[in-house]
Length: 392
Image (cartoon, rainbow, N blue to C red; front, side, top):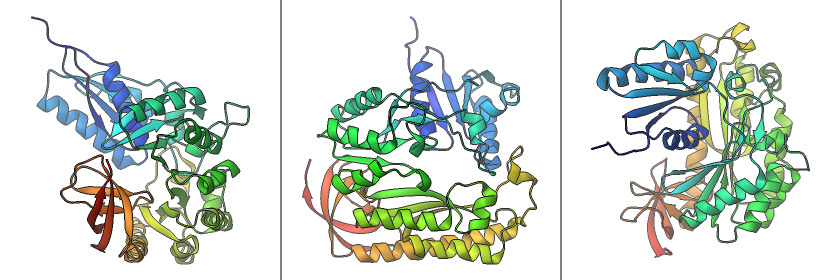
């Protein structure tokens, strides 16, 4: 009797885009044979090390499995991964410019963009992802429609450099125009969320989309990296401290309930204590709530790796201080929610998310329901709530 054909198993490292691609790769490599896709990440040396370690462990524990390696780290070093014992194939080619849809718990993920044309001094990802390329708008609408038909109440648009959407399409396409198209064509979609964006590329259509349609979730995660102009210049970032603050003010003026998060790298080469203080200060200047903080990790082959380095212990200490600042900002936001009734999308594990990405405990509520809940307190990380209405 022949063994049944089944999707490959996927082990994913890194970003949401990798998560989307893992589901597509798992289907593309369906087989009667036991097959595992290891989708790697190259954003830090530690991420690459963990992927190599996982491959060796997989082969040791499941020696009969076919191991296929994909992702940024694999594209950057195909021979290095091919030489790991147990690896049967390395997928080193760049993904095509098409929309990819997948499911992450209760929400749908939709990759609409891939690659990056910028060369930030610290980043190796453009070499692993290739040039910026956008999925055709009609294909994006079709994939989003399929997710809605499949019962997804929230769709998250993702990409390597999401706000560069349309740069290769011509005809005036931008992320903002795509967002307005999706909201117009899919009136039954309850929530549309954006993943990380570059503040310098926030276009007028996107600002207006936030102002005119409440279904566009009032939450943006900004790739800020630093609050100091000289460090931003040395990072080869395209925005300034002032432009970041102005973008937040402009968006908040048009959508007063919007919440901002941000990525930061601390301990970047040549960063002084005064420069770091400017990063601490921009948390309040931009009104940030959710922080992702990373101590600088030099990537071989990048300009930043050749710059004078900060001691790792100093970078770790600064990261801890910035995270503490972020914790204070989050608690301030959570305090302001107490006594309010919010609409939450319930997730697995008794948790849920508000439209502005605030996390909430929703005990006893099944996943994938849109509920109304009274905020009664918080634990510093998530709201405690009492459901007042189960919509559907």
